[in-house]
Image 1 (tube, helix red, strand yellow):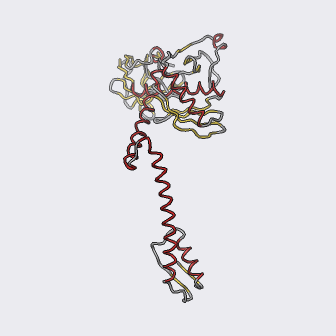
Image 2 (image 1 turned 120 degrees about the vertical axis):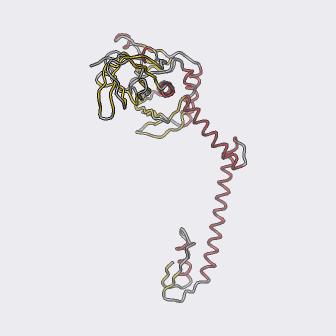
Image 3 (image 1 turned 180 degrees about the vertical axis):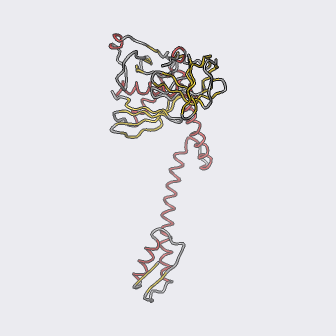
Length: 325
């Protein structure tokens, strides 16, 4: 097994570094590069891996297997070569914002209601948190507000490596039994959790969080949330939609909901009027059809929905024996 020094634990804000290629292994889809040291975080702790470059060779993913840090590339790098590593920082910082925001939300929910985070998935657009207990919309709104207030306090995030004795005295969250050295991430007054992933240094860097959806899931709740730049992008997209709807309805941005409700009522009224007029039209149409033949046949491509059946019933009432519409 080839050991790699993990630079991301020394400084999560290290964007570039110099390293030596220890091994280059050919794989099914490209190559696995092992370095003497690396700032690339591998997938783990619910957080996707970093991406970036080693010189001009793209690092697509990074995984830890059997203690080795494998950088997945589509081109080889010769062993012994010195390379410049460059992290895709926009991606890394976004993931740090999302993950740190999730810690704070999960911690405050656990504190308020005693529920545990039993599932966590970080996607490219949103992240989901699975809780083992129910919440209502009012409670969700309260958690969102409190989380943002704690974020804006801009508290320092602490990383701890306690001894086994010290760990026994810490009340921390963890989804699985842990062995060996445990890394504790503490958001003071909010959450203490065992986690191996990079996080922001201060809560203020999260910016804000938005809990955008909640659905019942396995007896608890699945919350969809956004943090930082994703929350801002979501706000901007929704604001743009509201402005477009506002212009179409000739209503102020703040009055869009009322305008849509009014439009819905008008549409329902018009739908009822159209339905009544169609009934009258069918009655007039039926009067023009001869019902004396043994088989009354009507071909009308403009009839839709229940109209063929309704016309047939009118013709049968008028004396038609067999009717086909």
